[in-house]
Amino acid sequence: MKKVNDRFLANLNRFVENYDTLSESDAAEVLKERWRSEGARGAQQSTPKTSPKALPPEEGVAYAEIETRVDNMLRRDVYSLIPLAN
Image 1 (spheres, one colour):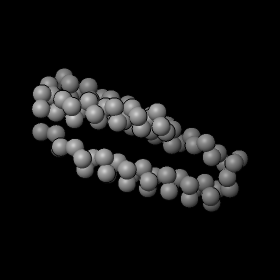
Image 2: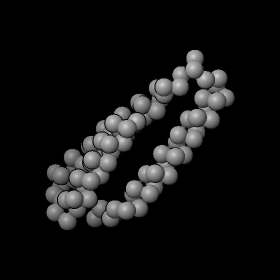
Image 3: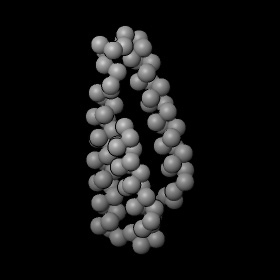
Image 4: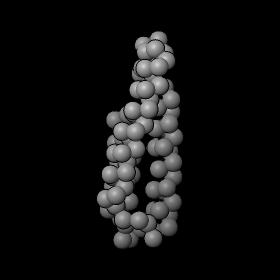
């Protein structure tokens, strides 16, 4: 997930750094990259390293839920630091 998160943060930094001068085409590219990184995140989360062979189903579900909650909390904190797009 580190590569996926790094990609997400790089795109977010691009948005923040260019916020005051963001053109329509730049905004469209930031949005496209966001959807690409979200797709990569979903693909990564749907194929965790903790496969059913490694964990019993009950533990796998708990792991996935914890991973999702931690990810959501971190994203909430990151998004609270940036301005809302105009």
